[in-house]
Amino acid sequence: MNLWVFSMTWMFVRFAMWWSSFTRSERVALLAAFWVLLGVIGEEIAELKFFEPEERSRIKSAVKRFAIAILLLGLAGDVVSIVTGQAEMAALTKEAGDAKNSAESAHAAAGSAEVDAEKANLALRMAQSKLDAVSQQAEVLAYILSARRVQDVDGLKADLEKGFKETRIAFDSYVGDTESFWLCSQLVDVAKGVVMESKDECATRPMERVPITDLYVSAPSIDEAMRLSRILKKPRRVPGIFIGLKVAPEVIVTVGLKASMPLFPETKQASKAATSNTKAKP
Image (cartoon, rainbow, N blue to C red; front, side, top):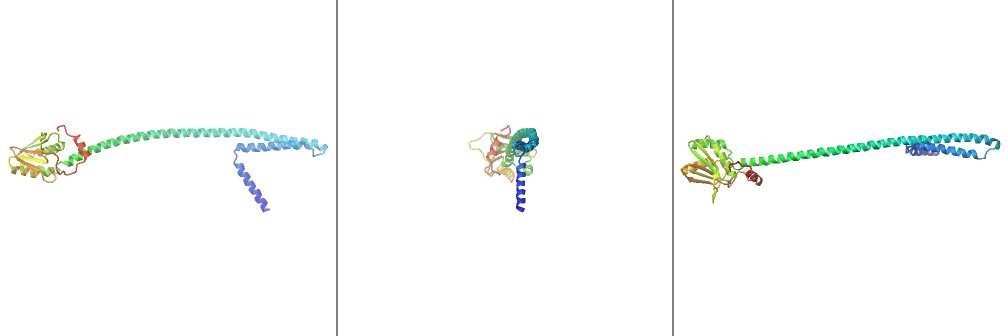
């Protein structure tokens, strides 16, 4: 008994799984086909001669009526399955159309996002170019301010005012030497208002066969030239180690070529940029 119950349950479960795999229209079509099959079987049974002649006519008529009813029910089920199938097909077609529209919308959104990303990348590249330009200018400025620049400006002014307030001092440098021109111009600006006269002759001295390097001081006496050179060569003032002294009627400070021992090492990029960003005078 238990085996029979288990077998029936297993068959029912298998049938339910098989039945659930069909759509609604397919289920209606299967039922309709089953009823049509029953109607046809009923028609065949009505033609059998298992009954007595006096009962055959009555039973045959009843079976035929029953078979026709079942057959009509099956045909009606076919019609319902066709209508249901068309409705399901229309729904699937609509879902497919909606999916296509969604895909097209997603594609358009992706294209718009790609355009926005390209614009953002272009703006980023432009910003990076501006940043590179600013960085290059900053490197040039840092190079100019660190290579040969007086850092102890206040101390230099105080020393010049103490020892050379009543003196006329001329500052000059070679033509075309940008680095020396910047240092020479700074010395002129520092001496203005401190000494009696600060003459700006920077970038006017013609290049000599053996040019002066570092610093060259001319004065009416060696003692005066040495005092001025010591003021200029104090720490954090004019960089370099070589100083030339000369006796001459007027005080002249010549800023020579690049210092032999600069405060900071020169970079090729900064040096190249510095030569392209000079004042108009050199």
